[in-house]
Amino acid sequence: MNERSDSSVSSERGDGQPGTAPPAAYADFPDNAGEFLQALLTASFHPLCVRFDREYRVQDWWGEPATYGLEAISRGSDVRDLAPCLHDMEWDSQVTLPLVHTAEQRAAHVHILPSSDHCLVIYIQATRELLQRQELQQAANEVRLLNHDQHRLLARLIEARTELENRRREAEQSARVKSRFIASMSHEFRTPLTSVIGYANLLLDELPVAHAGAKHAGAIGRASQHLLSLVDNILEQARLEEGGMVAHLSPQIENAWVGD
Image 1: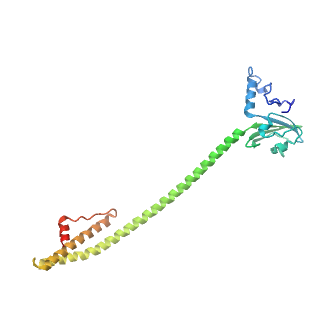
Image 2 (image 1 turned 135 degrees about the vertical axis):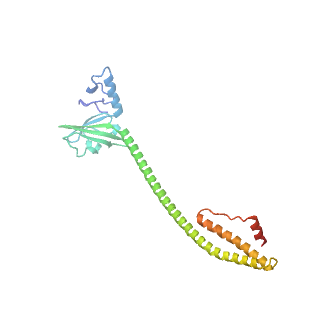
């Protein structure tokens, strides 16, 4: 480490240990409180102060250059080679550069304090803040990705729901068309069956009971009645539009139909 400069801007000795004189802000603190606070802040923020002239030649420094990747610092070297952020700096005003990347994922808040014949550059450790910001940014990116996935999933659900709704309407329309067709065809069947039953009854009234034709006319009448009951069931199903009705033959009609 370099020797301690006589400049008043000194917070550490050349060996990196806290200076013996506490800052003026802590001068009124009792006992060793000022020195304790100075050491605590130095350990927490690892400040580095570099002084250079208007030709950008390093005159002196205080602190730990290695903390900021400035191990190559030496008196007389061009400070811009070590800190590119100092290129084209203004000498008439103080400047603060937040979260300047220094080396290997390290960062610092850089404070530039120019004066008439020299300039002070103060580095304040900000690596932890940088990591916290990176973590927050990563969390924000993950939230954006989750929102994007959620919106995409929602869009797919809406699309699927729309498709299901369209299919439901098509199915209902198809069911209505089928019901109308069944009802129309059932009426077409019912009319001739009624005529067949009527003529079968006429034959039964005119022919003697023992006549063979009477037996055949009875079979025709019973079969027609059975078909007519099935047609009536189909008509009922068409009117309900949902489910179905099962036609159950009574034992007498079923026995007669099986016998025929």
